Length: 251
Image 1 (cartoon, one colour):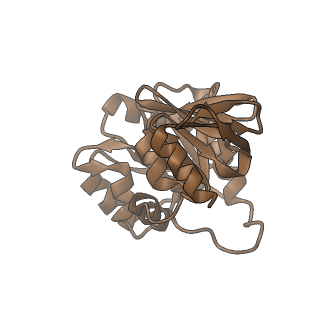
Image 2 (image 1 turned 30 degrees about the vertical axis):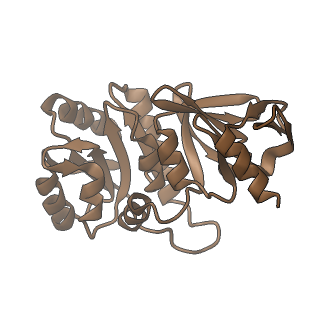
């Protein structure tokens, strides 16, 4: 069955590229285009497309705000020149996230994911939350993050928070350590602290958070600071305030 597609893209050249790529996919049909957030919302309600190719940055609002203001719930593929939105995109249940410039092969890969997931019922038989409901949850910050999506080579892959050993500030970014691997994520340490479960992820230093489930032992580093040894063989020296917090938790 042919799936209908709405292109929401404010750059004419980029929109033309998406149209050309879609023409090579026999089971997808472009039924409309929009250049701004207001036009996108109107087109979504009028056309009710199966798939939405959605630019993150639009005149009048962001792509996420378009989802918040729409009642329709298509499969969403984000397109953007900036990759710092990737975590939010996947929190919203996006089928894929294309960073410009991308080629035909990468675009075809994204549509293949749409085919697979739209043709497959949920594993537990329940209906997945809509993109708009996910948007409200993700942007409210009320619920802790359940997983991260990180860039690995040319792909974006999920990382279970259970597997995250520690997080380390790296300039304006945060390096997430998972076993022998680490990933640079475009979120601040303050944002991670706000969105992670405080009972599991402890801010032991301005530049370090550790997963309490991966702490092997804690020992004295000097008179006022503690050293936290983790089960991946690494260790972190807690700040004075972080050390005091650790002491308070063991009382």
